[in-house]
Length: 143
Ligand code: SF4
View 1 (cartoon, rainbow, N blue to C red):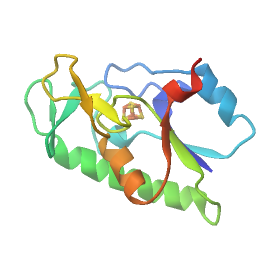
View 2 (spheres, rainbow, N blue to C red; view 1 turned 90 degrees about the vertical axis):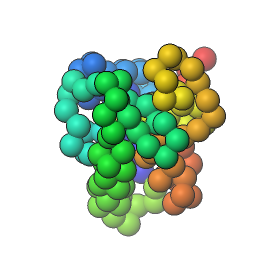
View 3 (cartoon, protein in one colour; view 1 turned 180 degrees about the horizontal axis):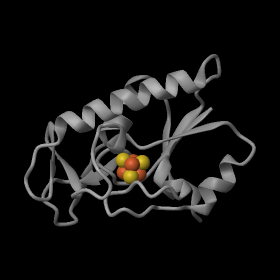
View 4 (spheres, rainbow, N blue to C red; view 1 turned 60 degrees about the horizontal axis):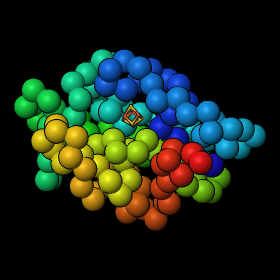
């Protein structure tokens, strides 16, 4: 079973109220079992919401509010949902949205809201990696 960022499948859960639909990801998942998740919505954040970025050990939004608790709680709840959905099935990996403070992999924004990228994982990605689950992004499916 695969874990996938819900916004990549066209669900309108991103901060702007829109999505990041990526047909290549949908095509890869065709005929496979998968569970779509959105850690930020699971953490109780609204749609739409202020954009957020990781800032050291914290997560902050663009108006300076600390949303660390929501992000970590959302990641934890999402992982619970994933385990429940998987049952006895093996979790083969995750396909998550690049650069997101929850779902990003290897590259994220630096917390200054200036579009500056730094090495790092999103909060949910970090949790999955700590459990040994491989994470890819939609960029791995684009040519
Ligand atoms: S938290 Fe992940 S799934 Fe939710 S909108 Fe952001 S990138 Fe997409």
